[in-house]
Length: 237
Image (tube, rainbow, N blue to C red; front, side, top):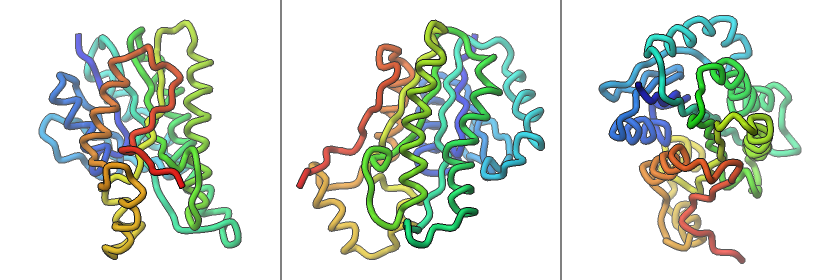
């Protein structure tokens, strides 16, 4: 029987790296996102998880897409898709906060209810949170709130699925060399130098390194309910 990775946002960044890693490890891969993953062997379903109406429009497509793989040995559901906005407590707009929460938190909850019926013992639900799920920096208000919520969501998942032998974990990447980070920080090399000075290994993490961590979580049920830092070590001041 087949093993299946269902991943959101595999067109780039950590999601793309995870799709590649799981393919190499013998998994079938189904990507749910607006943009296709261009890796050979990845199955794509186009949908916009940032829209509150995504389920009404795309639920049947997702269910049909999973059923197409036939009987499955196990499923890894990887909640990776996210958005990051520049905002603060003094200027946040409700619509902006709702949009971030929809993609980063609500869509994951909706996918869980849709896909858990396909998950046998040995399956897993994995969340990509962030270092900012445990701390905060300025001018990233909505993102920080959402990533704290992701960790709470994982912990609630662990409690609700006790006894099912489906395990869960949250991986918290530190500064990782992705398109999303580049868009948020811009191209100023001084900013990147300041960031790496606070990292024990003096460099950004690579998406492939986060993908390795995610695969480890999928294979290791003993970490059920765990928050895993993947940040190359943060220098505390």
